[in-house]
Length: 86
Image (cartoon, rainbow, N blue to C red; front, side):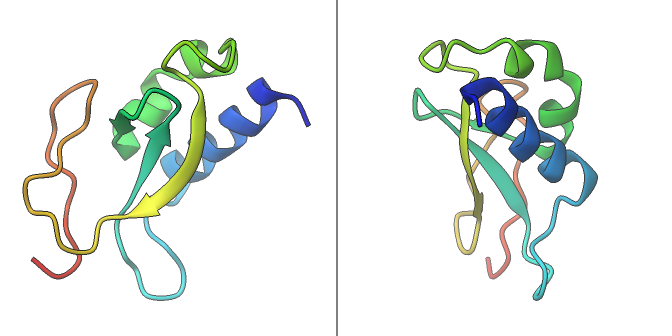
């Protein structure tokens, strides 16, 4: 699987679902440069994610759950990312 297809698959999963199953915990995307994306930006920035080089800041490395950080914000739009327990 190429870097672009894996990155786009993860971003699409986040945009479609947005919550982990089971449990319903809020998800966010971890990017290759340490940034994070919210569910909304994972969908609206698909063009950049689909054409990532793997080291340009748009490569989605993984999806993660925000358990307790009430101050976590999207690196792109600065929207708050909901915390499961805060």
